[in-house]
Image (cartoon, rainbow, N blue to C red; front, side, top):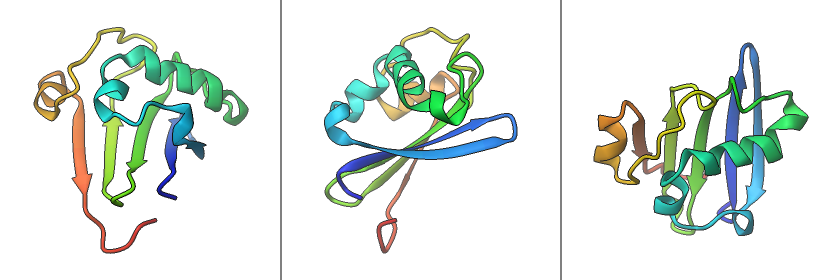
Length: 109
């Protein structure tokens, strides 16, 4: 599980979790967070089979790094409307009404 990224994509009453290889994504959390468009691109690529549209999806992203630290990022804003670029730091994300929670579980997934 340490080599994949799990996306929990919620759309209305639907919920789907996908796992994609980290090779499909830059390993840097900074790069992932730097541009909402990158997240929209993943919704486009991996969400269509789950009936999810980038224009009205709310997305939770769980990243598991090789050290088994889980970073759970919940983007509560509508990604299809919010085109702003966000700074990758947790402080900037919080300031822009994004929330970042870091969990250190005793066991991985």
